[in-house]
Length: 114
Length: 114
Image (cartoon, rainbow over all chains, first blue to last red; front, top):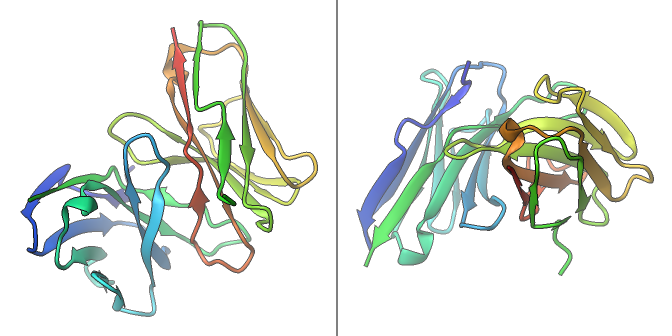
């Protein structure tokens, strides 16, 4: 049972345009959502997060939107740059106990074309 | 550099051999996580330590796997009697107590079982 889904394995966008990466989840207990970026041969790098009490969080070129009723979140990158080309993972966690294990989606390969 | 480090970065072994990986978290982080990532998938949670106590283990962590964090600093993950299905990237992450769900990942150890 995949609790976090990224249905688009790849996305290509022209430099300067908007990149929109999508993520759906099934577990209504998730209360914290994150996006990680991963380059080849490196570990995932934290990008941006959002608590379930918010519907939007912005950090520079990156904005995450959360639609709790639809159990959907998205990452917007504006403007997209060639250096943004990487695999993007959506992740979610539940604040039960002391552990906050992350449940990841399968990732979306973003390619920004110059 | 004060990020999470992992050693070795690559390990090739024959089926049936034992392997051990090491993770050095960010020094002030008391939470440490191990994840496994296979090709085309996101990282999957294996186990979690708060200081030296192993507080949570995934059902993915069979009895051939054991993890320790003896002094609440570095951690080791041992796989006994390796199988070809153990081939994966093993990722370590750490976080401070009050970080919400944000975790900082190391570069990973790529295990290939022949």
